[in-house]
Image (cartoon, rainbow, N blue to C red):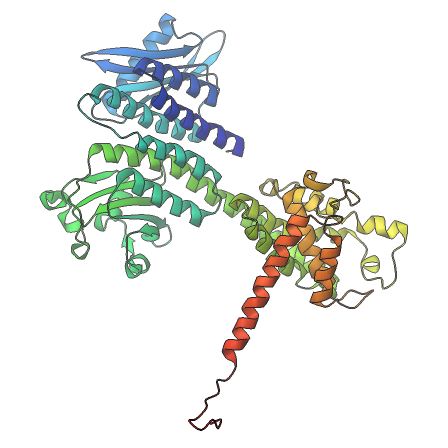
Length: 529
């Protein structure tokens, strides 16, 4: 699924949650909900209905044909089947004019029976289904909240946490950080004393803890749960969420609970639909709190969203890693052709990442800079080895050929869609801050930040390394050159950040040297012993 679609769907969830907080009544909220769903998915019609006594009542409807008899009949029949079976219903209907696809998704709650119904001119994708399922969880909570608000005081901070989840999860592309985010959101939503996110290894059919809160390190590192074993293994095998309000009074799973953990109440929810990829667990160990259906509903919303994100991040990472392996072999080829630049890309990457982190750039931008630094010179394969190894100055024609290497690199990488955000960084990494660089002649902040960082890292590494036409500079000489060219060739902010990185590294090295010096001991008469 494209990044734009992911962001649009997360934005829709944020809008729905925000509407719940600021709109005064249920009808206003459901009107906003069906309108937002219609816009996010591009469907032609959407309705939300709930059961009142024995009748199915439509709370909100939007789109073409929602008042036509055929639509009303189909909506009622499919919604009733979905509610009774507690599973989605879909149907393809064609007439002389067009084909339509209809889908009914039941509200996942025991308190209120209802259904979200969608009509579209195209079949829904798997991601669309997952999105709609997440929407039905929010809709169910909203309906329950409205019906029970006189009896219950439901804390809207839970919904705020879900909104933050949409923003945060959508912006994290590092799977380790994503899992940490999931754990802390689960803790905020459901409470409890410990949270663990377990991932299933399909080779061994074992679950291992990949992110956790409130667990000892030996438990995190030593836990291996096979399918069917313990609570998490049972949930992963069955694909069914599990609520144990009071473990001591629930004989069904007494044999699955680890006695040494002392768990009093537990929630365990499978991650994934057709293919289970893991389990999210929240446990109460010390307090007297008992989890409820409401807690399970909230955790289900979280899992529905993160399962999409986890899959996308894993696929995204796998695609990039596979492409990167091929590209790194090209980097090695470049460095084999030009012996004097062996290890250049690796060192430039180290410098560029240090600058990016010093500037506190977002994870997504740091990752793009990492790939750009690794791959920035593979276009040199398109430049004659004779020119690259020339010991004298370049002719005008030779200079033009050398300066074409950013464009050649981009042309080589362009077919690989996983590197879309990397290409501008590479293309512009030889721009100058004053606008007199190449390839585009951009200046100042028109140059991508990643390119400005790469320019400094690349130049510094080149200056302190040997080249066919000159010996290497000392580090002090290279630093002085960076200072001299700050504001003309290089971005002053980037230069300042890099110099701070080098200074910190130098202080650390000096400190290490002092600690390694042999200590001298003086006796009582001042004679060194």
